[in-house]
Each structure stands twice: as C-alpha cells, then as structure tokens.
Image 1 (tube, rainbow, N blue to C red):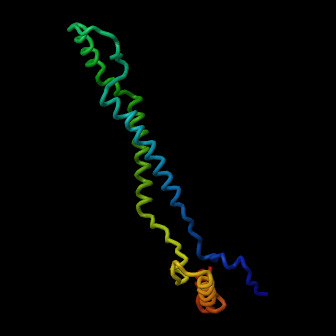
Image 2: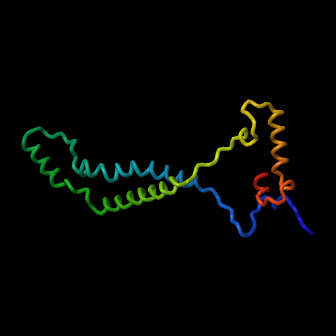
Image 3: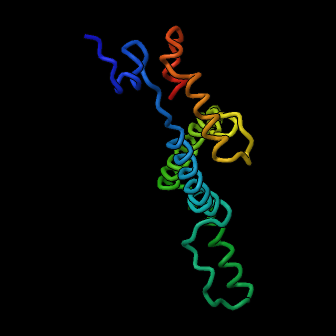
Amino acid sequence: MSSSGFKENFERGEKESLDYDDSAFYYFGLALLTVSAIPMTWHFILYPIMYGDMNINHRLNNCNCYLCNDRMAKRSKKYRFSWLNTWFVIKLVFVAFIWFLSYQCYEIVKDIEPLKNFIPNELLGVETDATIAQVKKAYRKLSREKHPDKNPDNPDAVEEFI
C-alpha cells in the first residue's frame, strides 16, 4: 500500500540532511563579545598602562614644596611599572581570548549570505496596489502551475509548491 501522506512532503529522505540556520547565534555572539571586549580592554589593559599603578594616592593634600613634589615624583617613578604583574598577564590573556573569539565570530558572520527577502507581490506577479481579487486569482493560477500532481516529472515540485 502506497501512502502519500502529509508528512512525506516535509521530509528530504535519508540521503539528504537538512541544514539549519544558526547565523543568529554568531551575530549575537559577535555583538556580546565586542560589547564586553571594548570596556575590558580599557579597564584591564590600557588604563593601567597609561596611568600606572593605582596604589599611589595622588589625592593626598601635599604641599607644593619641592620636597613633597620630589618625594611624589620618586614614588611615582618607583611604582611606574607596578601594574606589570601576574594578574595583569592573566587579564591580558583573558582579554586577548575574548578578542580572538570576537574575530572568529566575525570571520563566520562576514561569509553568511543574507536571507532572501520574501516579497509576495513579486512571487505572485502582481503589483503592490493589486486588489484582493487579483491576488487571489494570481495565487490560484500559481498553485495550479506548481502543484506536484501537475508536475509528476519534476522532483522539486513539492518544494516549489510549499
């Protein structure tokens, strides 16, 4: 007994596997990684390099005599590279990894083809200001042309009809 059921119209068979569109995951990943990588780069990497260690309290009310200024300059010079420690290297590796993941997502996203636009008027061959009766007439005509029973020799007729 040959069963021609509704379910068979949506199966591709054993030889062909269905592809899924997972591009939204990569777009979301790229956005999330980039939004987090930029402030992390500033806070963990650039700020300590540009402004040095935050252990020196520059807000102390020192007098502006040459002794106090000299002492503050010596302290700043001594702690100039104090930001370069194990934690800085760990933060640097972490931020570099985040940027690497962002780049990988970008490489995938740039090659994704845009989704085809679904424009019913072009598909049916009617103008954008067509009446409901014209749209119904064009739909019925196209469905008669593309119906799988009308095109038994075309193996893609089911997909074109759907």
